[in-house]
Length: 184
Length: 281
Image 1: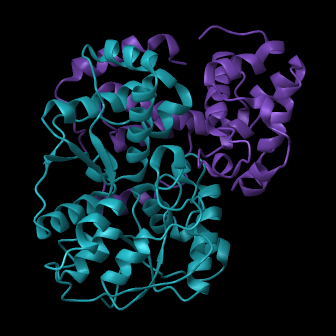
Image 2: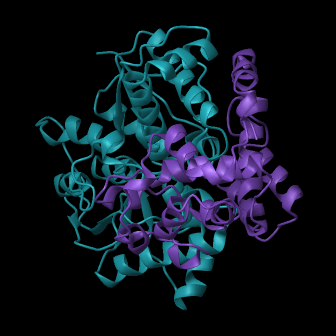
């Protein structure tokens, strides 16, 4: 991913996602309906406003925000936006840009670690190997808070000890190598 | 029309009871299907959060595998996988550049014209009008139909009946003898993919959902998404702490509820795999 100048971030967002951030007139419906707005450092509508300014300082604040990682991609904002602005797509782009610039908010460390552990599992087996992913996540974050769920899950047959692999793993490797330039 | 089912990773692991109930209900309804050959993970939230191109190619491989196997229809019981597959199909069909990129990454031309179904609409189309399906054990319960996010949003992709107040699960529940309640949280988010990375938020959001369902007299929740199920069922200890009370309401997959009404044994429907026991049925 090529790193763009921050004072042009808005136009790049619009070009890369096709979402017209400039159309937002700050009605606030997205923030009102967002299930995690109260936990965010900047609400969804404020993120859009900050982008609209084309100000490099504010753009950097957006990329360093916790908000972009807290977004659950629940799509409520997009569903209610009177201007049909696809905010979740913007959030996807901002997250990737934030990783590429090493600007990930420290509070989002666990969220990013979980995503990475998930993708690394797919890269190795073609499918999500839940035990492997959980182990990688726990080791990287040293978060063993809900390890007590594991015995229950084993007991109920919900966790497999061994991964179930895709047979044609070559094709999976190829997909990962061909999309490598975008891999954070 | 030849039908394939894409189970996805959850239905092979932590949500295996969902797949067990889907399989047995399809069998009971005499619907023939085969599993997508050598399927891979759709990439779910992680891929579209971190790597846009990967999030397009992983689901494409699944669609291509289903199409190469001669299928014309693809049933995707997991709401998250369904959403990703539909999103990618729409991207491929509407954007030539995406189609070319995906085809090059897969080393084959992909048409992506297969009909992709979610479980809720698929079940409606296959049981609501049918007269030969017999529900020998009507469910006789007050149920809260919980849709969550990915089945109903975004409308441009999934084209579900009503975004804010969908009704299809309710219609199915009436058909199997249950009484769906009217409630406020049917399309609110449960915390989705934060199950392991931010359990506090999951518990907070899931608590609100369960509390509203209970306050309005629901005896069980009906879901069609393995992530929603995991959050509402397995996060119960944290949820009880937030609500400062015991929360015993069970969470059933749509196909488990239908299976019960069809007279299928609770064990075969995987009802014993839940964290919150399903009693008195």
